[in-house]
Image 1 (cartoon, rainbow over the protein chains, first blue to last red):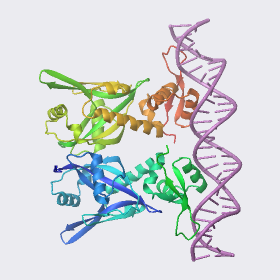
Image 2: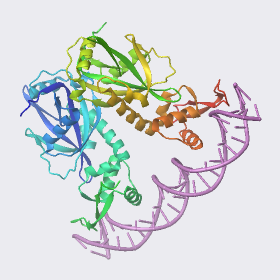
Image 3: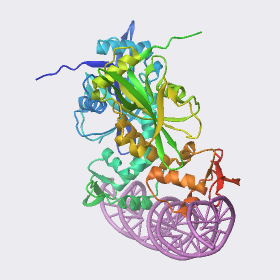
Image 4: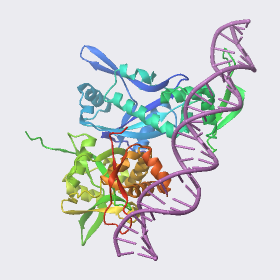
Length: 236
Length: 236
DNA sequence: ACAAAAGTGTTTGGAGTACACCCATGA
DNA sequence: TCATGGGTGTACTCCAAACACTTTTGT
């Protein structure tokens, strides 16, 4: 039994997918190529899609992420909707949308989601043969982005800064299964734009009672190897 | 120069308007009457509207609030969007929508806003001759509500509980210009479902450095009159 | 042996919490 | 004079922040 998926061309979801490479906080962007008279125009966009008539918003965001990465069970959370009429007024964006969806497009309100993923998971990292790449969040103001995606990313950043402050265990969504205390601290500092004291940070994290110290150390480092920890979500 | 306002029947805003009467946290609901064969059906709904094609989401929410209360400069904040396809599947809701808007209605995604208002401001409190009334938030589960407005109110409550914890100065949006420390404490406790210690609460609030003690006391109380305070948003 | 990062405790100040009695006012 | 809430201080605990030296390992 098949059901046909009909698009609703008035509402979309966009996912701001965050990853952490051990040093920098990164966002996934998809290359967009538009054939224009005489030349090709290239920029980047967030992974997103207009919704299907028969799916809810969370399902749409989850679908977008699944199609992009092949992954399930990713942390995904709605954070804000963007509905300025002008956000879909750029002729280039309209042209691209109508070409891609084969539908007449007017105004689109988009619902923003943030996703947190482990950057080391080898994700499919392609979508319709378009290049998908990680970009340092500190560079996004210098990247040419479609629609209001620049504004969306900034709002997403603010949102996760706040959320990860209140729920620090969500940081573990961004780290490999086994990680060192330094990795965790660097991640924390990158997100909150701080410089944590090593000793105080260790104490604070251990007080969460969600970290398990492993009998294992990192490998292939040109200095003393650091102990590895894992996250135990059962505790608390 | 007039511009015609055209509706976009795919996206709406709904406002969860909170007020505080000195004892209880309240929400504004509008009576909804639907003529059905043989009888009239009555329930309540949140103030809301489908958006105009030429306004953004904040403007739509602000318009709804202006039309309802006649007030400007109300604290208003987007908190979550609701887009389950089933939310607009109840035939009664569809019937009412199509009658009200004179448009063919399919699926509507709604963007939720919370507003905080001073309940003593004599608001217009009528909309198209429909009764608008304050309801104790603790009673909402016993009230018949349109669409998914019950779910929206619950999400709004959770949202302001969190927000007022992080930004306690927003409580002053719910209080009269001059208020007693007890009023503030009761409000705090109603929102956070706590029982604060009187002395500790006083200290905590004064540490915000945003309260000015006035040379004035409350009137017409059958016991010792309490000192009045005002909020000074300049500080900090 | 040296370079690089890991690992580890103590002290101090501020905030949160617990707790009880007298005061002012109107009825 | 009584009932009702208003107003006030101290002691304890816990968390956050500041701060420096020794250890391990690879080159």
